[in-house]
Length: 89
Image (cartoon, one colour):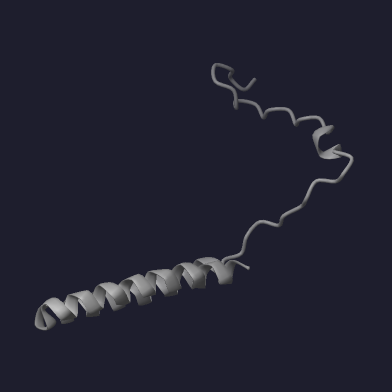
């Protein structure tokens, strides 16, 4: 599901970029070539970065149960020296 949103966002950015590129070409074709090359390089790097981040391992998601027993568990005691003003003894 995350890949769908990645391609939706990237596709919207690509459509906007193409519209801007057409506008730049109609105004000054010679000056816009460098800007378009830079924009394509940035888009390629962003796509590779997005795919790299989407493939990174994440923490397992454990949904709470219907009885709410996850909220009935006692909290763990604080380790020594974790609270400000209290030295570990």
